[in-house]
Length: 143
Image 1 (cartoon, rainbow, N blue to C red):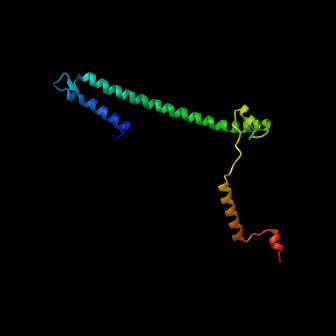
Image 2: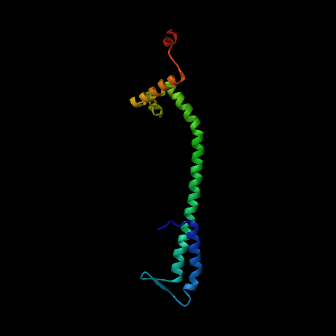
Image 3: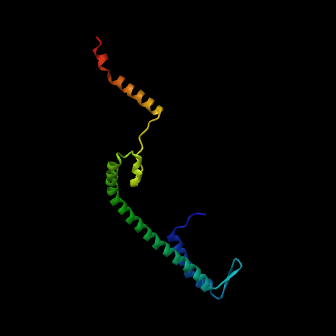
């Protein structure tokens, strides 16, 4: 079943509410799925749905405002966090020290390269040196 947008739901519900008078012309009730409904009981269900959608909209707006406010505060804190981390690193003896956890920071990990990455880098480096004609001082001196 395709997803129906809020505007489409609202328009549909209001149109149904407007059309209930015609639907109940000359009737006191209708039976839908073996349940009896009066005009008032059907209208109440659609009005409740409209109120719930309005509430969802208000809460969505409030949520967005709260998220925006939190992001602004986070942006302000990043500056402080960066400098507090530097102070903690100075006291701990470096940003890679395990004692950084005492200050609320995970120690920085030492970068590691796999053997394959090192091999590929070395091959590229040698190819570049050969292409550019770069040789060691020893090889330059050989007559």
